[in-house]
Image (cartoon, rainbow, N blue to C red; front, side, top):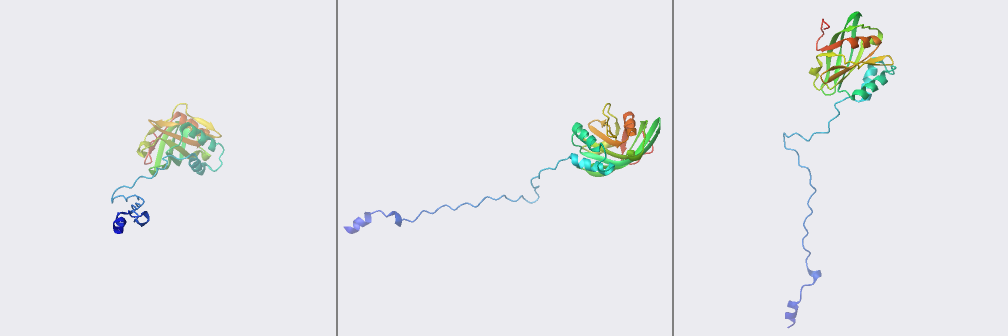
Length: 206
């Protein structure tokens, strides 16, 4: 009788074995990219030059603290924004009513790097002297450096003078070039002429 009672008594909870708990899955890890597959792109760096970078490059041409240089650079940035290229170089020229100028330098492009450039052009009343032989030009919308090598007429009503420095807009289609020079002669010449850029030096300025 006692044996039957014990057989019918349920097993106490403390004697029961705990149920197996599911194992905690390992933290997910990113699978490595298959061989030959391009990894995800990193954030792109700006394809234009900041104002401080441009001012530093211009001061390398005209001298640090040159009167009016910072103001004319700021004016150009306010009007046009950040350029994606600039040109540093020198030029020589002369005039007797009608003048010519020849220049050469280096184009610095934010994406495509550096390359040599030359330019020529006729002018009226061109006067050169002192720092007038130095050239610094901001270039906008030059997505392909091949587009630089064309003729750029002066844009009407786009010249201004600040502290001895002059700037003038040259434009062909969407590409805009803003040469910055020291001296009034540069302003007169650009107002009445144009610049033609080439990969090699030219004898004829036209």
